[in-house]
Length: 202
Image 1 (cartoon, rainbow, N blue to C red):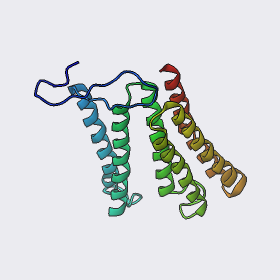
Image 2 (cartoon, one colour):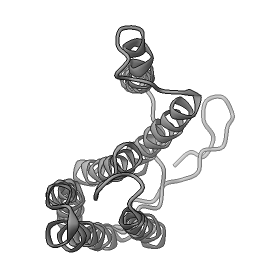
Image 3 (cartoon, rainbow, N blue to C red):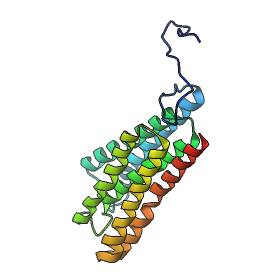
């Protein structure tokens, strides 16, 4: 297997052996893939600028500089995670599992910042959702992209997410918020199922 590319750059060999721990990063190329990347990032920019356009026509939307900076950071992180997901594995179960996990984290953060999951955004109960993100982030790092561990991690995050909605919301002071919270835990569960399917398909 040649280790030197046409232009003289070193190309390390990639082994196809090993467990379902992903140990290599794909080299992405081709005009079609680049077009999808450009469309994805342009879509993120369009979403960030949508409130700016809306502010020209209505007073219902009133974002300041901080709101736009936070939105840009959030969508930047989401876009980066999607890029990493595509590069880490060619398994579509794995890719969709990771994307559902990113979606779950995005909806959790966005809902909490905007209106609060339980009650309003000043309700201290909403701080509990930090534990959900902590489980998802730390579990992903410790799993080293092992599909079985990722499935367990997302199941734990989804279970805690739903439990907070049930205990603090439905059985607590905000039934509507509790039901909304339980519904938003669904992407974690879907992510877990997809990672499990990725493990089975390996």
